[in-house]
Image (cartoon, rainbow, N blue to C red; front, side, top):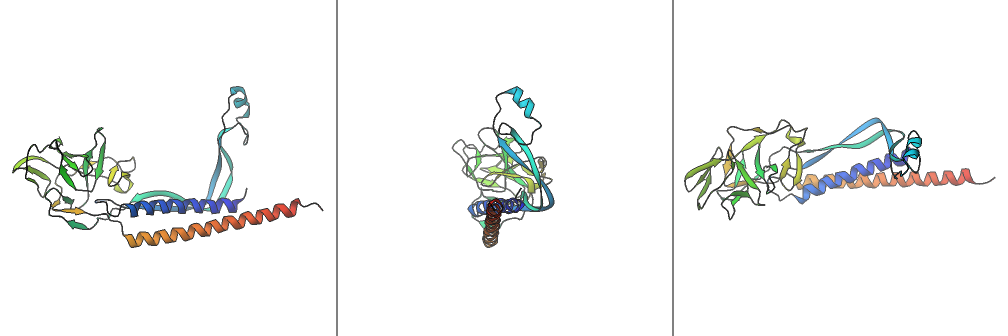
Length: 272
């Protein structure tokens, strides 16, 4: 087993994922309420590696006969091939919880969550998501929705504004339509919000690691503005440059290891 090639390849895979994370952050720098993700790498003193075989066995008797063999062109699944030391692998990606800057719009249906928490929204299929984006509007049916059309969830479900022309949102999330109270925004928080999963733009969904949503009884709302993305362009560009350089260095290491292996085979295999 060529441990040098595996080590270099592992580093290249890590940096490739780093570039994916940075690229997604930069693509959403203008998405209201978007919170960037950070790739977390870990180094392990020793990692067990295995090979994935994709072949299919059609003879069940042969499958039973070969189940204990480490290598076979008929084997499908994982087969251990050894250990590798001092390997850097991508452990996880977590969401940054820093609040983004406020952009004032003077639109009464644009709101900012002043503190922790997330608005609750629902798509047309009944799926529930969470967001920091308070860019709301009224659709043709009179429902309060996000700018992408997801339904805003209030304390009693979807919020319908009817034929109201004047909409206002109070400091604690109360929703007024032509001066009449029609509901209140539902705001929730999570035990570990860094583990929420992005599902598109500023939408998030819960995971086992994030825990379930807990309702915030008295949220603090600022109307007339939007929370912008918390992505810092300069910092992300620095991360991109670092990841590119590390990827190139790992690629050179793999190339050198391959050349040395080729020379070794040529020298050992040469007849005397």
